[in-house]
Image 1: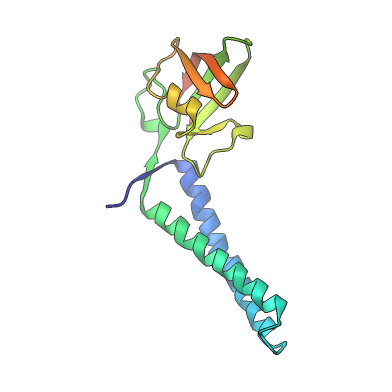
Image 2 (image 1 turned 120 degrees about the vertical axis):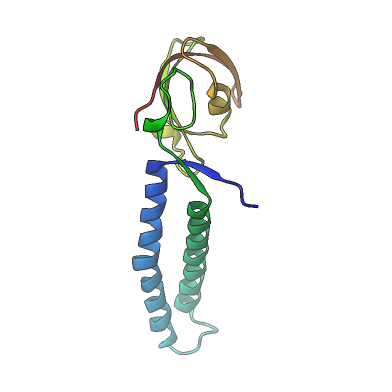
Length: 160
C-alpha cells in the first residue's frame, strides 16, 4: 500500500513542470549525447559516453521518482480549507520568536517544496511539526539544532 504524499497545488505543478522538462528536453538531449559519443569509437575509454550514460541514469531515476510522487500525491488546496485560525498543511503562519522579538512568516509545505530561504517549511521540520494543529495566539516550544525556541503564532493565512 502506497503512502500518500502531501503537497500543495503549486508543489504538484512544479513537479509536473520538472517532469515535462525531463521528458521533452533533457532525455532527448542525453540520448543524442550518447549517440554522438558512440560515433567516437571505443566505448571503454570514451569519457563522453560514460558521462552521458551516467546522466541518463540520473534523468530516468528522477522521472520515476516524480511519477511515483505525483501518482501518490494528496494535493491540498488551501483555498478549500475552513478558515478557523488553525495551522494546517498549506497555511502561511506569522510567528514571533519570543526570545528575540523577531517575526517570521512560514508556509507549511511538503518536503519537495521546502525552501527555508523563501519561508517554505517542510511539514516534517521541527518548527512545522510544533505549529501544526495550533491556533492564532498560542505559544509553542520548539527544539531545533540551536536549542529550544519559544514562538507565538501571530496570524494564520489561508492564501493559495
